[in-house]
Image (cartoon, rainbow, N blue to C red):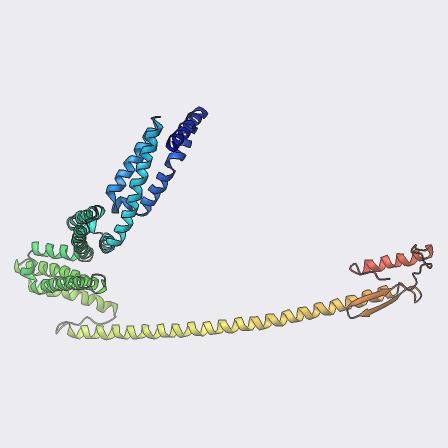
Amino acid sequence: MVAKAGLLKLVTLTLLLMAAGGSHAQEELRKTFFKEADAALAAAETANAKLLAPRNYERGLKEYRDAESALQRGRNIEIVRSNAADATEYLRVAAEKAELAATALAQVMKSRQDAANARAPELSAEIWQKAQRKFADAIRLLERGDLKGSKRDEIEATSLYRDAELVAIKAQYLSETRRLLADADRARVGRYAPITLGKAKQLLADAERELSENRYDTDLPRSLAQQANYEAKHAIYLSEIVRKVRDKKLTAEQLVLQWEQPLQAIAGVADAVPNMEQGPDQLTEELVAFFEAQRNQLQSLEQEKAENELRIADMEEELRALDERLGGATAERAALIQRLEAQARVKQQFEQVEKMFTADEARVFREGDTIIMRLVGLNFDSGEAQLKSTNFDLLAKVEKAIDVFPRSERNT
């Protein structure tokens, strides 16, 4: 009976709203039937149910859209109510299961985020996709209540995400080195510069080992990779030189003369005689001594500059302190002058007022900076409060005194 009464009220409300206008009626009906569904949808999205409880979330979203479609097409209001109610329930369950998954799958979600931060979807796509599939399996099993199966897939997904992260990190820091070494191998650099190329490969191996042992401490691997890049490029350069010598495109004498040219150019800058009669050793020593002297002089100048900056800072501080002291003295002097001027002005005003009255009319005297005037000549008849005409002249003088002291107070 209660249900019928409720349905009757619902139908009555619907008819009234439809009579009030189409669009307005739909809006009112939406507020009525979608209030709980909207709240459930917001809660599900906040809980990331689309990722962590996809089965219930998708079902809830379908029922929600069906309810909206039924309302827009003007279908039976009971269908709208039913779809909205089903959407509310599915989305509520989705939010609950998503919150459970967020706790149960916290470890794999952290590994997933770490891998994403390392650009694993881009730099380790194959392993990332495998991890994604295992992660989806773990969520699906957890949503169905299979905790054991979910835990198994979670462990596998976590391991795959960590592998993808490491591959991505290595790709970020070691890709250029690997490319250079691959180019060197294609150019058969190892045949002509095996020592330098071997050094580059060893540095790459050291960088990979460091990243494998501690993937988040990338300073040393980055430095090793940079050294490996240098050695790889150096090996490629040396191999070209050696190849030219072996192919007789460059004689040993030409090679030595080419290497002497940079020393001669540097000697010119250092104002040294480029004497290499017995080889470059003597010139090298002279150039090293010259540049060491230049470095020492530069250090001395930098130290002198720093000391001068400190002295300037101290002097600026002394100037600021002196300005503050002088500023305070100036302010005190100005305040003193102002007080003296005020006192002189009050004295002048007192003398001016004092001369206005006779001894029978008023007593004028000072108490500090205050001027007090008592009107002894202002009298009233006994029992009367009316002024006499004989007092008008005295009152006129009082008005003039007030003009001299506009802030004065009258006492009788």
